[in-house]
Image (tube, rainbow, N blue to C red; front, top):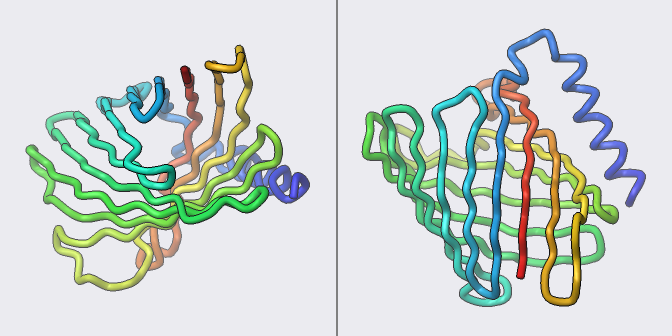
Length: 198
């Protein structure tokens, strides 16, 4: 499994080098997470972009989490409640899914979005694939995938004891459009995550 994760990670990085001359790396994503018990907080900022969000989360059960996001993207303000259900974790494989409602106060239309979350890890290296479906806002309710988010990263543990940990994760994110748009690349960016758990 480690070889598969390394191969997919190398493929994503290879795509990034191959497509570097296109419209890539114009922005970056930076996440700051704090988790304590059942509660969590995430702050995300984007480099060279007007997008920022703050998200609070609460574990309803071991495999069920509720979160509420407040995001600003230029003139648009979004409030997004979401529910994530972890289905299974078996060795390096994890499966989950999420439903979220995207309420916009700005110029965009509200919509529902559903996603599958498929993850593989090999030690501290990981990859994640998230096919997403959007309903509402002029959508016809078809079952076609609207886009797919791919991520590959590595978790560096900066500090750890029996009650707390600090991790820093650099990752590459590759987003493709869905079937109707020929699976075309939407963006490729670098991201970081600093996570503190106590």
